[in-house]
Image (cartoon, rainbow, N blue to C red; front, top):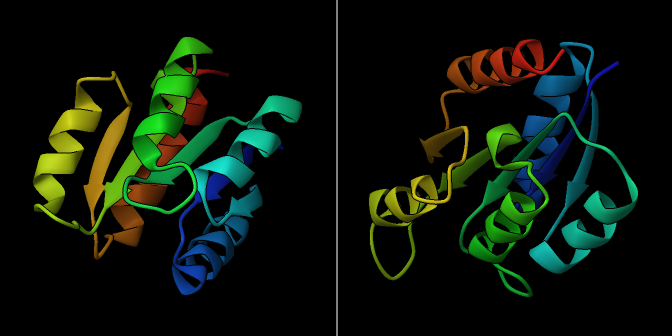
Length: 124
């Protein structure tokens, strides 16, 4: 069974994504910031990591860079609703770190699930 880590400081979004992905049969862990996520991905193996960019206590850029160093950028999906600049600016920067995909909030759940499936199939 494939395992996914969702990292977002929005508890409702974490719950919605967790539920949507569990309905597809995935095991899903969540973290509310990059610091908590790092603890999880250093001790567990994840097939896909979905991370928000703008978060307290370890933002998504730190997560993406860390995962890139671990050789996991091709299993990483960056998401953003924006912040001081537009979501597209943050996501364009994330793309430079070789993430597998980027999505702006509000998310298209079907497209996100399709990308998760694609990443998992590519690494099976």
